[in-house]
Structure formats: C-alpha cells, structure tokens
Image (cartoon, rainbow, N blue to C red; front, top):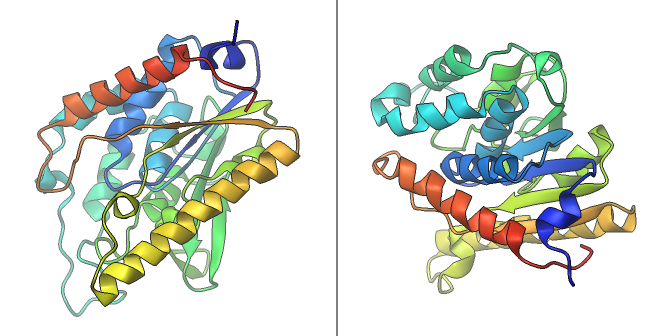
Length: 272
C-alpha cells in the first residue's frame, strides 16, 4: 500500500515552509492547524511575506492566537497612510501593522521561539536575499511582509528591506540550511497571475514575468534539497480571496485551507 503524506511525515524531523501570498496568512493558518491535528510536530518553520507572519506565530507557540485574531482584523487596524512626500515611498507606514505584531506575538526575538524560525526579506539596497534566524522578531516579520507600493520598505541593517516573496517565494533552502530536517512540507499559495490569460499590457507582462521567475526559483530549490537528500512535499491549495477591502471571509479562508490540507495528508504520495 502506498503511504500517505501523513505517513511520510510521521516520526521524522519535519520542516514547514510557507510561501508568500497576498493576505495568505489566513490559508497558512489553516494549513498549520491541519498539520497539528495530524500529529505533525515541526522542528522548524520558514516563511516569506504572509508565510513569515504565520510561521512566526506558529514557531512562537501562538498559532491559536493568530487564528483568533484573524476574524477580528479590520482594515482600519493596520491602515495608516503615509504622506505622499514621505521617502521611501509606500502607501502605508506600517506602524499599525507593527503594533499588531507587537501586541499579539508572545515573544520578542527569534531565540525565544519554541521552535526554530527562519524568515526572508529582500534587501533592496544591496540587491540580495536577507535571511533572519536571530534577533528582534517584529522588525523581521514586518520587513518580510512589506509589499512594495502597499508598505514602505523597512530600514534594517543599513539597508531598506521589503517583501521576502520578491526573491524567495518559498524559503526552502533557507530552512534546510538553518535547521536539521529529514523532510520539508511546503504550503504553496500560487501567484494569481500564473492562472490568468497572458496579459496584454506592459505592466501586466512585467508582473507575469516576475511571477514566472519566482515560480521557477522555488522549483529549483526543491531540486536542490532533494539532491542533498532532503525529502520535499509541496501542498498547493487555492486560497479564498482576501484583500484589505474584502476581509469578511476569514473563517471560511482558514477552514477551506485546513480541509484541503487534511485531504492532502490523507492522500497517497511518492517518496518526494
């Protein structure tokens, strides 16, 4: 009998990697809840953007805090427009968002998390990927979630940091290099642009090109980890659409991802 995904994870050192996705922390919360219900106890978490936020709460032992917070979250809670003349440019200052993180995360730094945590941001100043595994937690998560145009870049370590999903859709390699794992299970929330017809506008084509590059990047990381002897399983779910102007489906979004992940855990899989 072919083993299920849950069988492949049982009794092994499991790392969990959560992808970037616009407001994807709802779906990621459902994903991690399903893993927990199946008895999976990760030895490490990694995430980019919304994945970094969810990974931080999970690693801090506060997934239930996040699950309780999401249905109550409203746009006004994090909507703090910056002045048009403010540099660096961004619609939102991010101070209210940082306040939410500071109020609800039970630990102040990576070292105090119950489980090792890896987050990724994009260092716009140096043009490189920035990996965080130590130090203050809120600034790292804020930087990883700082989607260009929506949020101002976050000044850190002598540079400006922005959304980790720009350079690392699913931080698989960063996780495997920071934590000893036998297998990584990744939650992929696919970029919407890849499922749409080819755009006809220059900006649309640019967005499509970026989505293709990021998609290709995480797939190469899967190959790299497998070549190093690390088993990798990618669970892809289609999230309920959530935006700053459409936030009433929080409970449905979490439940939908949790149900889809539960089904994936019960499905037969190869060796990864």
